[in-house]
Length: 293
View: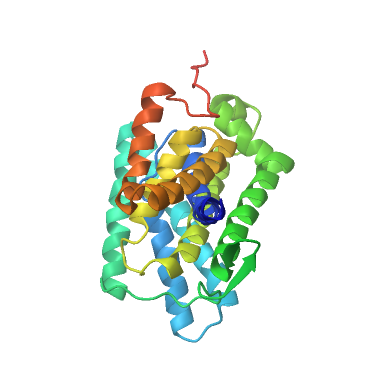
C-alpha cells in the first residue's frame, strides 16, 4: 500500500505540470479552435531565458517572472503579427495550425543558435534530494514545489476566468465570437491575452520540469505530448477537464512505470489519445461544438 501511495504522489506532482501544459493548449483551442503546436517550444524559450539569467548571476526571483513575460510576449506577438494577418488573408484552421508548427521550428532554431544543442542542468532553488517522511512515504522538496506550482497556476486561472471581467470576456469570446463582437467586446485583444496567458502557464511548467530533465532545445517535446494527451482526455474545450486529465495521466504514468514497465510509461499518453478519440471524442468533461446560425 505504501508503494502505491508513493507512486500516486509522484504521479500527482508530474500530473500537476501536465495540467498546466494542457490548460494552455485548451485555453487557446477553445477560443480560436487552433491547436498550438508551438506551445512546448515557447515554454522552452522561456525556460532558456530563465537559465541564461540565472547563469549570469540573477536570482531565481528575477529570472522566473522575466521568463514568463518573455514567453507570454512571444505568443502575443505571434498572434498579432502572424495569425491575424493570416486570418485576414483567409487562412483555414489547418493553415493556422501549420503556422504554429512553423513557429515551433523557428524557436527551435533560435534556441540552438543562441544556446547550442548540448544538454545542461537547470539551476533550481528546490532540491529533489531533500525529502520529508510523511507516514510511509517520502516527499521531496522539488515534488512539493512542483505540485504547488501546478495548483497555484490552476487556481489563478480559475479565478481569472470565472471571477473577473476579463474572464467573462474570454468566456463570451470562446462561446460565440460574433455575438461577443456585437456586444462591443474587443475580441482580438481578448484572444491575444489568452495566447499570452496560455504560454505563461507553459513557461511555468517548463521551469519546474527542467530540474528533473536535462535542459536542451527539445526537452519540452515529451511534456507537450503529455499535456496534449491530458487535454484530449479531459476535453479540448474544458479547462477543468485539462486539470483532471493531467492529474489522471500523471498518476497512471507513475503506476504503469512502477507496476508494469518503465517503457510503457512513455507510450501511455499515446494509448490514452487513441482510446479517448475512439470511445469519447469530446473527452471526460468536454462537450461537442455546435454550429450557431
